[in-house]
Structures are given as C-alpha cells and as structure tokens.
Length: 434
Ligand code: NAP
Image 1: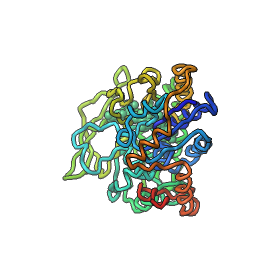
Image 2 (image 1 turned 180 degrees about the vertical axis):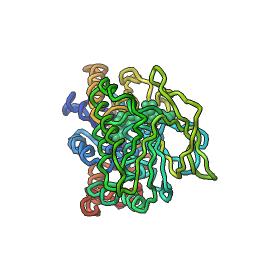
Image 3 (image 1 turned 90 degrees about the vertical axis):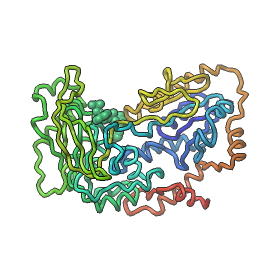
Image 4 (image 1 turned 45 degrees about the vertical axis):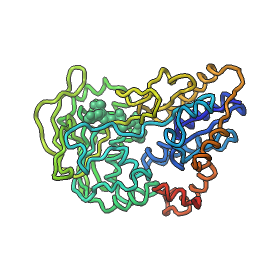
C-alpha cells in the first residue's frame, strides 16, 4: 500500500488523485486535504456562477472522491493544523495542489483605499467563499473600473453588468445576487495596458458580452491596428478580435449599462477622500517588443469601485521553497524535494484552462511511482493523520459530511438554481449540526 497526501481539493488535486488511482489501483490510499469544509476549490469559488457548464466538471471529481481508497479530509489547514513536515513523515508522497487563490498586488499609489478590491476577493464574494462573505463592495456608485484584459476581468465585468433575471440557473450566492440587484453601476471601464491584439480573453467568453440583456460593450474603433493585421493572429485570438470589432459597431439603444474597453490604459494612482473616487490612468503605446510604454499623458476615470484582475499567486507555506517573482512553489517539473511535489497553478502559475491541470496530475503520479519503486511503504498514512488531528482537537469534514452540506444547499435553492451556497464556515458546519 502507498500513502499519498494531496493538499487542495480543486481540479489539480482531484486530477492528481485520479492519476494516482490509475497508477496504483487499490494499492494506494489518497487523502485529499482542504482547509475548507467543502471540496472543489476553483470550481466552486473561482469559475463564474453563470458558467454552470464549466462547473459541471465537478462530477468527474466526485466520481474520484467516491472511490473507496480516496478520502476527503476537509476543514484541515496545512500550516497550522498540521505542518508539511509532519505530512512528509506520515505519507510516502505529499503533493501541493493549493492553486493560486491570492491576488497579485496592484502596486500603485492609493491601491489600498477602500473600494479597491482584488479579483480573488471580488470573485470569492459572489461565489460564496467564506473568507469574503463580508466584503460588501461599493455598488452604490455610478461607475466601476476593472483592471486587466484576461478572462477574470471579463467575468467580473459580466457579473457587474447582468440583470437579476440573467442569473437564473446560476449558483451565485444569495448575498451577492441581492447586492447586485440594487447596484447603481452603469459604466464598467475595462482597462487594458496594451491593445486589442494583446488581450488574454478567450473568444467564447468575450462573445458573451455582446449578448447581455441590459448592457452593451463599447470599443473605440481608433484603438485597432489595420484590419489586415488580424490575419497574422492565431485563430482563437483572431476570433476574439473579431468580437471586439463587432463591439465597436454596437449601439447602446435602450440598454442602461456600458462595458467600455479602455485600451492602452495603465492605472497609475487611485485618488479619493478616504475611499476610491477616481482612477488616474496613463495612456500607453506598444513598444517594438509589444510591451506597454507610458506616454506621459494621463486622464481620470471617476469610479467608486476598482477591481484589479491582474493575475493570482500561490500562498507560500512554511518550510516549502517558494519562487517570489512567479508566485508559485520553486519546483523542477513538479518536484520540490524528496517526497514533496506540486501540481496545477501551484506548480505552473495561474495559466491555462481547467483541463490544463490534468496532465500535471498524471506526470506527477508517474514521477512518484518512479521515485518510490517497489519498496514497501513504512508510513502510517491517514491513520497517523487522524490520530494527530484528534489529539489537536481538529474535527475533519469527510466526503459524506460534504454530501450532507450539499444536500442542504440543494434543498434550499432558489427555483432554477442548482444550489443556494452557504457563505460562511459556520453555516457549512451548521448543516452538520456542529
Ligand atoms: P491573465 O489571463 O494572465 O490576465 C491578466 C491580465 O492582467 C492581462 O491582461 C495583463 O496584461 C493584465 N495585467 C497584469 N499585470 C498588470 C498590471 N500591473 N497593470 C495592468 N494590467 C496588468 O489572468 P486572469 O484573467 O487572472 O486568468 C487566469 C487564468 O484563468 C487564465 O488562464 C484564464 O484564461 C483562466 N480563466 C478562464 C476563464 C474561462 O471562463 N474560461 C475564466 C477565468 C479565468 P498584459 O497582457 O499586458 O500583461
């Protein structure tokens, strides 16, 4: 028998557990440990609530989780409840699949004013992440700025633009739905420090902006390079740019909200009297190497909410080597050290689709198999972890506990919604009578 601990129950964690099962079958016991009492990480807390078809991949992870030799060990924080060093003593292999749940900091003057929010917090707030239940973003303002031109910026702009009816069928958390329904925001500025040919948005997601009930995208035709240059783009990017060109011709009509693409716009300062009131932006141009260069010309965008969507970082863990510049664990193709591995965004940084994490899991399973060889395991595995947690008064949440939480969420769902998520740990554990 092999004993493996996977830390993190998001896509990278469950793809890895799946790969370990494929490698060893019944000869491996895998503990998937998560600090929260609920599984699936990015799927539950990152993927937009109105993208249910993407979230449906959790069914695949559920199948893995229900396998006899895979355990979900929720409500256990690695670093405080148990250390990585202790896990390395208990298991043959420890795999960090902790994702990248922290924001890359927006390092500009005034970036710490109330009203300036990182995407991890804002996305976590509307997705029911317990850490952000009390975020209370200012929505009683007429304009918001969303910084970044990636898919997260797109998610945030779309969520700010939708009508309550457009959230039908989503699992947006109740407190966010109520707040958004009363939002006064009418203009959402999407700031890209480069141009339409340098966006990091995928075409399907970008196209959605053109079909909103009460909002319209606006693009300044002057921002585009000559149309002939589109032919040089790779097909996905060309499709995205085609959407942007369509947006440039759209009329607002009777729609009350506008998503205004501000290209060549680099945020330099947030101003306001004790809270964000305006964003000062410098116009940029593209350098030869396609980086953005400031022109010295600035202008102000009046906005009381600023959501910075400029990428994520993996939180460091005590005793684990970390690459600060790239915001991920220091590793060589997933290997951190003897018996310690990483997968997914904790390994590569926050890029790619959910499926991109799958090969990581299979690669690391192969590496572990090669590293361990045929020698029998002398590790205690899950039994040792249970003993240690019991002695520390930590009560883990099992997968069947999670199924009870899930049933309670499903049971109280709004009509048409798959579930009404609990937004605090107290509510989640309350469903278990704790
Ligand atoms: P991302 O794709 O890396 O985009 C980050 C954006 O922030 C870029 O436009 C970047 O511009 C900009 N940026 C970075 N630093 C900046 C700064 N200091 N000032 C201004 N702008 C700055 O990251 P993401 O949007 O967080 O997405 C992470 C991953 O999740 C991506 O792989 C994404 O595709 C995926 N995702 C997918 C979906 C989906 O629905 N399919 C949804 C959400 C996320 P530059 O290009 O100039 O650096």
